[in-house]
Length: 227
Image 1 (cartoon, rainbow, N blue to C red):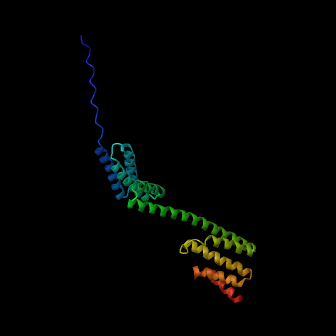
Image 2 (cartoon, rainbow, N blue to C red):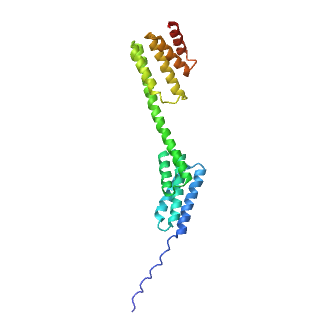
Image 3 (spheres, helix red, strand yellow):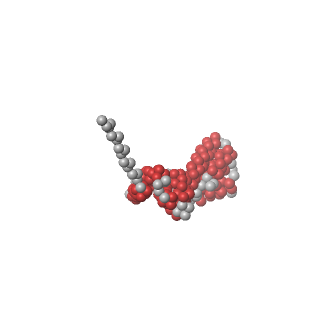
């Protein structure tokens, strides 16, 4: 008797076409755009990331030109999502990745510049915070030296504090208050050293920042009496 007939191989399922892959990528991009428009930057970033990953997997099936355009767009859009999330470093990296593929992409160029400005502002804030911390230390140490009767050392500490504030913005309220206090306190130290002209100069400097500063006004009057 004839043996069992050999099993027929199952027909191979056709894989997704290039058009299917592109459509799926575009769907993810559009979903990311929609999420970004509704303010859900986290979801938008996730959708763009999934699209970028899928694009890498499908790059052999998708035409090179389509791949380049999609890659530039996806990275530029994910850069925008990162900007919304204040993830400046990631936003910069994505914008630069977009520009590496499409150097004339205006959105990517703008987002790169925004990210760079934000990173520079953060660095400036860190530096300003350190300067303000050292200025406050100079004020505290100067007050201690003043109370101990070491007026020359007090002047030195107040001066150090003022030097720390030299590059900080003049219109910052907290910086202005510290700067005014340092000048007013140094005026007191100069009065105790009987350096009337120096005391007057420091009192005037304090009043230039706060015309109603009571201690600075009093110390200015005392200096004028002695001159």
